[in-house]
Length: 148
Image (tube, rainbow, N blue to C red):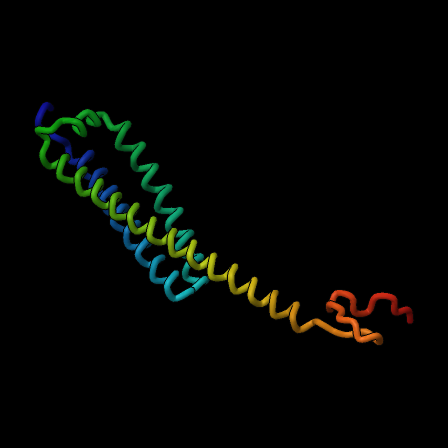
């Protein structure tokens, strides 16, 4: 079958294209959940993404092991090449959006760490006390030396 590709390899490729399209949607939904800081939705989307990635990996193995896998490199098989190009484009889109999501996560972590530092400083400033001699003492010294 030099130029005639069976429907089975095309079906595998179309399923892979569907999987990559679903992955792109999940990654976009993940971005929206990050923006909204919706941790419940985000947790579900991470699970969905992992599941889709496993399906994509398995489908990739199925395609590689198909008897007509050599058609994947045959430039004259235009229908195969078209689907492959669409799959590659979907992966590029997924990688770009995933990178944006990663940057958003990093920014959120830095903001959270900064806020935690500010709160710790405020807590330390509020715990300043004075002893009987008028000497300033930090809150961590409160209660030391007291025996009931």
